[in-house]
Length: 90
Image (cartoon, rainbow, N blue to C red):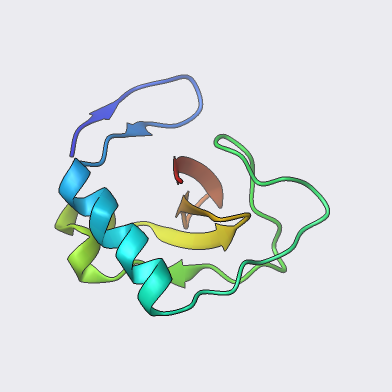
């Protein structure tokens, strides 16, 4: 994984093998998507009433500092300190 600086958040790059693991996790664990009034997109702040889930270690060691939400068939990686979405995995 590499990060590149931007004005608001570091862009998280996820290697293909970890993307595959993440997609498999979603399927195997039958994750239920959350619903929110606003669409959750990269750069947006996740509402405070939405529970952030811990990232499993097999998603890659560099991702465990993040949390995630599952929304609209997409996994969104979230910076837990700011609750800002830093990456979308679809």
